Length: 295
Length: 240
Image (tube, rainbow over all chains, first blue to last red; front, side, top):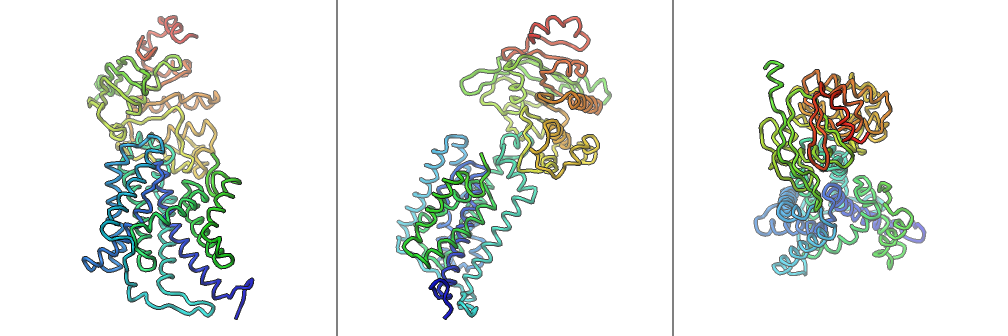
């Protein structure tokens, strides 16, 4: 058997694959956080809850209405996006421009509320979501076995990330978003409906989270607390990448997933701490993050 | 509409305008009228409330009371983006060039609010420097070029009333001269311009009327043909 640094190739590539998958989720989630932070200047502590809502909605829609995976892939993010826009319109808007601590507490409170209600209804032991039939099985690449679903998750997550990056960096709508990030008031003075742009941006950011939630449903345990677990890591990823950098959020997300995977292979005890270790080092060397703009 | 009747048209009427930033009371009852096609300056010392008046027109200050009519429409209850769509183009003192956008993106960013705005080609003819640097990052331009960009940006939108805040501040004389030419060209096109200006020698030959602002109130109105007669009054207000 081929060995690399004393580790069988199959084990190494298997862990790398898990790392890239986790990284794809980190990327989708930190991307949404970065987009929201850019325009709204709020740190969305409800982001994990939105991810969880996406996964829960997928399961519930299937169990109650028989909605299949492909429909859920669009419907669940849409529902969560609308929910997010309502949250923005009725709650976040009222504390816009206040100290960060208010939005932090408010979004954290929303997360706890959503999590609490769903825990009450469904418990915390986890719901099962059957893998769609067409994704059963996988392909033997010779050095490793690649399950179809994992390949799909990586592909579509990266596609969505790239699409989002393209939209923000290369289109007119994205120019509004970038300019609004710098000076929203002036944008509104030019005739841009900034309040609407803010609602749409928040809705879009949480849609990304919910989309990640749908992708997660067949492979992770779907529970009301799944979001709070991943969110802590995602915040570390965002800090490493630098707040507000769109490309940075994507690259850092994937990179951190891979680093986590490699650590799991070579020194498992450190695997859950390694991202925070990287965060500490990055903060010491480059406080604005790897891709953050110098203040 | 004839040119003469244009001059009767009140593009902007401000009455009893008070404005506040938090606890501080900045404007204490501004009253002024600007007719279509006029170039009117707001003169005064720093901190007199001239920039705040422009911001208040755009609904960009904290609390306001009084009345601001644009084209005969009361705007006190309007959000800033609705005011822009009445044909008001605002060029802030800090210029507001977006660093994450290149020159052309900056230029095409503000939505078109009325028909009859300048095309990109006309703008590049008026400001050849901007054409040469159209793919540069907006904030990499020189101060003068950034000011041209900030002006050009609102010409594309078709706004027919421009609120220009300290556009010559800190610029080389040759650039200031160029901006003067631009203002004359815009005036000839029939645009209404409200100019907040520190540089009186720049503003004097261009303007139809001057308002002197002090302590958040209009203390003097001077027509262009009264300038020489009222020069000493003006000097005492401006402290020159």
